[in-house]
Length: 381
Image 1 (spheres, rainbow, N blue to C red):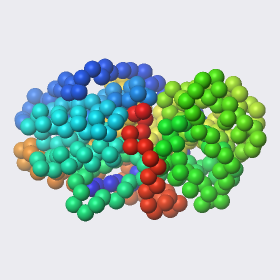
Image 2 (image 1 turned 90 degrees about the vertical axis):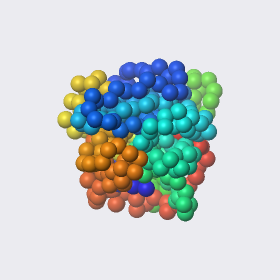
Image 3 (image 1 turned 135 degrees about the horizontal axis):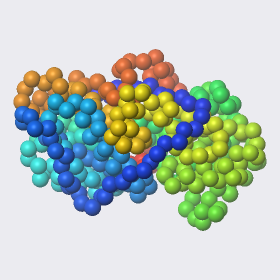
Image 4 (image 1 turned 180 degrees about the vertical axis):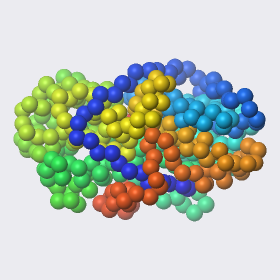
């Protein structure tokens, strides 16, 4: 399986990003995107994630992937979209059922967390269908067993690598004493523990961890307030997403931001909400203020929101088109497999396959997966 290192973006200020837009998730196999009117098109099953947490996750990824492909209009690709529910077993059933309905497929691309990818890869193997899997990277990858089917290419937001990079940024820019503010669902993924491991390896101390629980929203952050005011840390590291992130931002601005000299840190989507603070962020995707101008213009021209999911989709689409560009054979599963094996990530997230920061960022990460517990894809529940 091809896995390509990526750099991480550091920022010291919050940036507002639009997350408007929507897409109706009414059926499993949805309308196929039209292919260019050229020679025989490459037929791809494209997987978009359903999400109970981030309403636009699927539409953002889909629009990003189509935008990436559209940058190479001479490449004839026919997309057949299928929606994947948050539960791995249901997602795999939806995807494999769509595969069975489409005997003309040459490959499968889309949002597939590891538990989904494993089942889809096993189903695709008898037909020789190559897989291109996008994921958040919220868990450290487990080593594949000998002979285990897997995706030809897996790319991700590398949240575990981002967490390690964030630990370094927090330690260097804010200080060695931190309180972790963790969403209920976030607490089940490896990136939270990767941050702790990396921060402690640098000499930092995690003074307390507050995990948000289900209950009255008026009391949601009471425990966090107690932890922050009793420990008075250098930094509060906020791992939230979706509506809970918006509620945290409102709470922080109203109750914590001006009550002490502690800093605030998190992933780049912390910059999507107004906290009233200059948050330190680190991630494998750039905020709008750090965007490469040409890609920022492409997103604006197509009215695609600058979100992590859309960026992942655009990287997949643009990289796939680039990989197919030099194929001289007629579309086939074997030709696509060979093209994807040689592919290099390109687009709004990608840089050269080898960078100093990519090799350095893994030094403080555990050598084996932590297997935190959640199987559902991150951001989907």
